[in-house]
Length: 410
Image 1: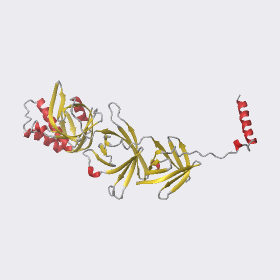
Image 2: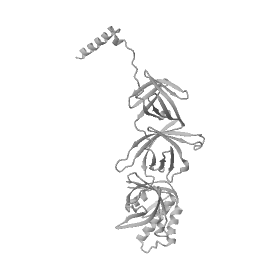
Image 3: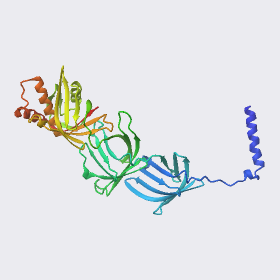
Image 4: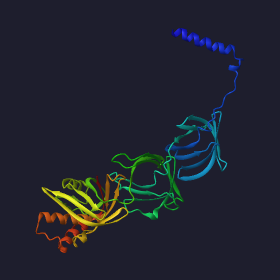
């Protein structure tokens, strides 16, 4: 059978050769029309070439171009033409290149330019534009070494961001989203030695599912010492204004950054911590052991609940809420106690709350917790004694130089 198949194919080829003058064997090349298949948004994200670009192509081949090459950002118009699998790509400033064209319809196309070595630029089709999805507040949780990043994307093309909180609105930058590419443009002078600076992220967006918030994975690259470093982070959408009434949360875990202080052992609810080598494990064990719980009976009240042995204690205090900040007014319950400022972030479905304490908030939080513990351990302790409370406060304040504490509640 195999020999018969080979004989048949050989005969077929010979017949075509003998009839080379027939109409079937003497036709013109039929060009494929790519004009409709190219319509839409296409993005190229190529760290190896230090290049990212988005093309919004119309049916007539005209296009709007947004890109970053190196640190240079550009927005321009152009035109793309494909004839006989040859592509012509031109900017409105007259720059034009020609090369070979390859396409996987609905997925990607490539432009290959004859250089040494040959250059290939591959663009992927974006069915969904993420410019609307990105608007809002996002947090990138701590990785254990750096503090979390908080960022708000406004619908006017401006973004505010900070490491930690509150946001530094004086450091607003420009951004633009085309397809699945996010372009940042920094103003002149923000980076010493640069007149301006820009870079790009590739975005992967996952809508919220049960128990989770919207997630945005952002991949970028940075050229350093003749090396391209690629990195990804995952950010989660949070509410820009707190919705606290009738919500309750249990302690889950924490993260610490920028911890500096005296080489001195300090007792925190039975756990020893030392600011010179503190990793957060002691506070984590303490909060888990006491079953630390918070709830908001209404929008103006916070209740702490914790367990010590067989004793379950609850302590409530009024709060003041402003945006993502709430202040626990402990001094209104007991004048000697300290007011504590929390910056808080709730997931879109309220399943999580992240609490952020800076150095001053941490010192006040510690003071109040220690004072409440002393009441349980020693019923004779007078929590209204300002001297006794100040002694707790001064002890921790003298020991802590800096700290950022994030508490995750679920």
